[in-house]
Image (cartoon, rainbow, N blue to C red; front, side):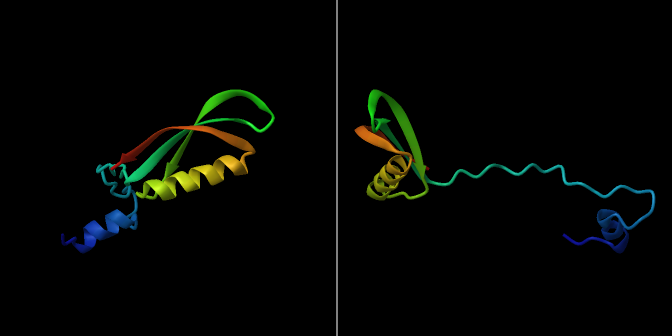
Length: 89
C-alpha cells in the first residue's frame, strides 16, 4: 500500500487542523494453544476442598501438571485430586 506525502502527513498529524487518521480495523485476540489443568486442593491445615485451575502455556500435559503443582505448593495449598486436563488450541 503506497501513501502519498499528504496522506502520510495527515496520518502523522502534521497537517494543522486535521486529526490523525485512525485505523478502524480491530485486532483479533489470538488464542494460543495452552493446557488447562484443574485440581481439587485444600489448605495445609485441612478444611474443605476447592477447585484450582491453572492455565499453562505448555502443550505438554506432564509439564503443565508439574507447573500447576508448583503453583499450588507456592500458595501453601495441598493437592487433593486431579480433576481434569484439557488441551485448548
